[in-house]
Image (cartoon, rainbow, N blue to C red; front, side, top):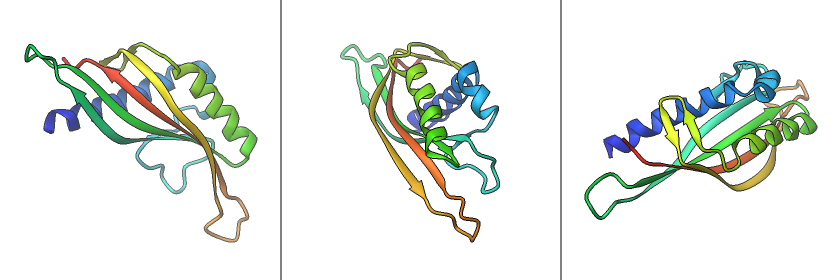
Length: 143
């Protein structure tokens, strides 16, 4: 289990690096890409990446098999249209991506689901948060 937790951390960091390195995305969020939780005062738009689960298909010869990590990527903005624009940029970039993600090598990224949500304001500001949520699976072979 430790190996999967460590690899999950590396893959989360790799996804941050991957998204931050894509100009279409970084032009919208700059460096506001967070793991698990954004600071309460974080400016919008931003992205929050949360690992939701993992699975492993062991190889029959005893070597590491394929790993699958499930992530939610929340593309957050003040306006629904901005949340959608950011979510679309992330979806188009990641859909069926393969290659480097930080220190990890991704075999494929599969888009499982896309949905929207709205969090009403927690104060009297009348500024809630619109979210386009992407549910993805990252497939890779551990080293």
